Image (cartoon, rainbow, N blue to C red):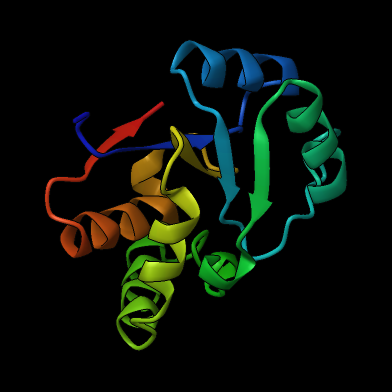
Length: 142
């Protein structure tokens, strides 16, 4: 039985084509968009356009805004504080982790957000919480 695996990826600094290529290289077949709001000033990365691009590339796309970071606007001024508030936000909503695990089950899945550096993004906090909830789950940042 294969090891449980979950990828994370940020699109900052990438084109949609480069993102798709990186996902394919990793064997990802499902993308879970974990942005609080799927809007992006970067062409091609807003929810509907990104969904179409992923589907054209043969990748399943699903938005999970409920696990997005409502404190993302605070991150520019206080990254550590914003991530700590997100960690507390998740702790107060334990029902969210099974939602993500269920959405990821059965496919090579990547959590998608905008920030390129996972340590500066809420998806690292989310991935850490998922790994704690699902012992043996390995997280790989693309």
